[in-house]
Image 1 (cartoon, chains in turn green, red):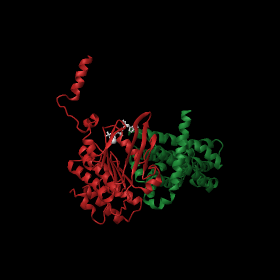
Image 2: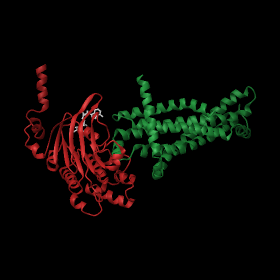
Image 3: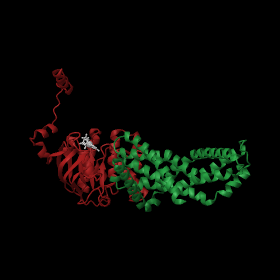
Image 4: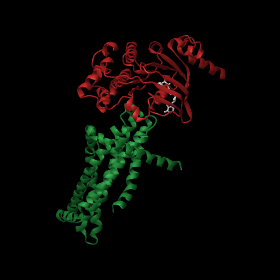
Length: 250
Length: 279
Ligand SMILES: Nc1ncnc2c1ncn2[C@@H]1O[C@H](COP(=O)(O)OP(=O)(O)OP(=O)(O)O)[C@@H](O)[C@H]1O
Ligand SMILES: [Mg+2]
């Protein structure tokens, strides 16, 4: 019972933070510099790891597809399988998981330490709401960067698949037929569909991590606890939301 | 160094000009504050008159910092009310109407910003003037506290006393109508403490800034205060002018203001004696 109450309280405070941050949206042009900084931190610095991970997801997909499709002589369709799974599910999903680990933890740690060391209190007294200065630029940045990251993940993943399809001997199909199948079955709307998912996950991760950071109470020790909570809650939410978002978008 | 705050303030452009100081008062009405069942403030009532310097003293742990949190609108008291200029300090509207400066006991500087940006944040966020006028204001505030050389430094590169001064300078740039100081001189040398006293007095005399100063510093308290309150274990035990306090015969107050230092019987010797008794 206590757990349920605390979960509901959490949801309530997240919604409050969202409403508050969105109400400051008109101040965004003034906060251009902060927005760009967050785009850099959230987007640019995450690109290398997203690329590496997606490349290997693409390769594994192609390997498994090659192995299972060889049985009924459907190897030419490997491209379609890699293309669709990357665009619709694995691209957005893995990007969000990485985001939770890399960006979510950093956001929670930064805001938790600002809260614990009374920097947020100082902002409040100066009438600079944390929702405006700390949360809004991050939310805006994630909305812009998430589609970019997802597209990069898709493209790199597709190429990873192509490399395996071409060079691993038991698969061994030409790049032309791999990409032909990929193009034929992966439609633009599938990519958009993946981006919509990613947008939801990314936004929720950043919002939840901001909220957990800002509601940290106590001493420096709580900063570590807050980071753990931020990442765990984000991961759970991504997985749970994945089902519901998929269901709604279908 | 140490230019007297008074002369600094007679210049035309400085952190304090342009403050059409309609002095604000504070009313603290029967507030109590509990944290997890522990009562930290017990039915505290007093008011700070517009333009007055009110000094709150009291032993460590008596609830002075907690009191400032209630007045600055960071927390609601468990019971009772606080009003600043007749309004609830926790509301955003109040913060738009009344500029409240709070000097935190631990400084609470923004660690990711340089000293200069710490001071410039408020005027930038509230769009008061262009970058040039902000620069002038900020550098002036830094000069008053002898911090010109620290402008480019980050909080992690400052000493404890410097952090405190930056924190005071940051509040000055806000052109506050109400200043709340939490131990403004606790980490400073006597000369710098004197400067702080001058700043507090100047803000009152020339700009009718209402001040509430929390301090252990008896000299500071008895020189600048219009009125002094003493908080003990969360209760306001006395309230009066500095003279009232000096002539008080209440043993708690006499002991607090004139602590006896008994070198012959240090505390740990007494403890040793107690231990012997029990063994
Ligand atoms: N957030 C909190 N949660 C629980 N207890 C608290 C909290 N803040 C303060 N207290 C308790 O309230 C009491 C008063 O604390 P406060 O910081 O106001 O003391 P103080 O008078 O400012 O002391 P000092 O002169 O040492 O700064 C202390 O016993 C402290 O343990
Ligand atoms: Mg204190």
